[in-house]
Image (cartoon, rainbow, N blue to C red; front, top):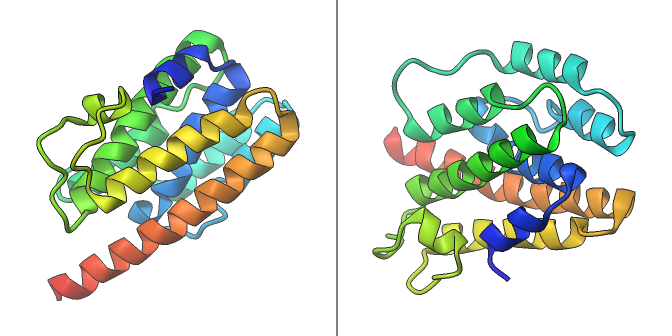
Length: 182
C-alpha cells in the first residue's frame, strides 16, 4: 500500500503520530537536542491536550529562519503548522504536509540525486531510481503508519523508536554537510 493510501486510512492518533514523527526526525535541522519533542509524544500517548507542550517546543525551537537553508525552513514550517487541537481534518492536512516536507528535506540533504520523480510520485509508490536517504525516509514513514494501525500505545513506542533512528541518520547527514561546508 502506498504512503498516500496509508495516510488516507489513518485515524486521528496515527495522523498525529505520523506528523510528529516526521517533525521529530527533522529536529537536527532546528539545532536542538533530541528530547525537545518528547513532551508532545507523552501527551499523545496519554491522549492529553498537547497545546502546552507544543507551545514550549515552539518557544525552544524559535521561529523559522527568514532565509538560508531550505531544509531548515521546511522543518520550521512543520513545527509552525502543528494543529493545536487534535481533530481529524487539521491532523490529516498537517500529517500529509509533514510527509511531503520530510521527504523533501531528505531529498535536499542527500548527496545522491533522487532520479526524475517528484516527492508526490514517491509517496504514491513510484520508487524507481530513489536516492538512499529518500528511500529510507519513505520506508520509515510507511512503517510508522503500518505499526500505528490498531496497535495503540505499543505502536506509538515503535513509531518513536523508528523516528529516533531516522533522527540519528539525519543528524549524521547534517553533521557531515557542515564539515564539508567548512
